[in-house]
Length: 200
Image (cartoon, rainbow, N blue to C red; front, top):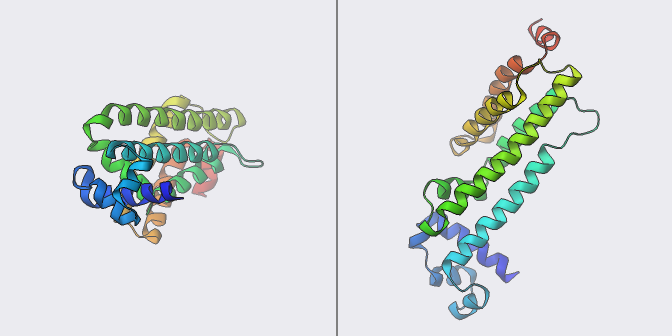
């Protein structure tokens, strides 16, 4: 319990003051413990930062696996729509994702290589799940045939592009713009008969 409280408070302080600006004393004070007690859990500030990122990464990987898993009775086009919206909403008002975004671009020196490598690994995990969904849709006839990896990449970068600006949106506006973006993408992905139905 105390360890998780330390991580939660440290995350907030790293977002408020930056990695260099947040001290071990600050983290201990925010947690309501003595500095000596903090050292009983973590030897160094960089260990706290690493633990925060490890937790974010594990939570995100579990979310991606669940998000890209096919559901009974859900065709590929419906799954892609669900994934698109649910991912954007996951990023909205999510301090952990804001932390990842900030420190991916401006990491402490000791974490730069690790964050880049592990971010790439999660991107590959996500892209593989999207491409598998697209292959299933092409085989099932709900998606038009094209290169699944290329289509997955276009889908991914449109979705990521919106997610990078979620701090600018309230939820209602975010949902409106997400649905509009998905509508345009859908027309490029749907099999001809589905696209024609939409235009009727």
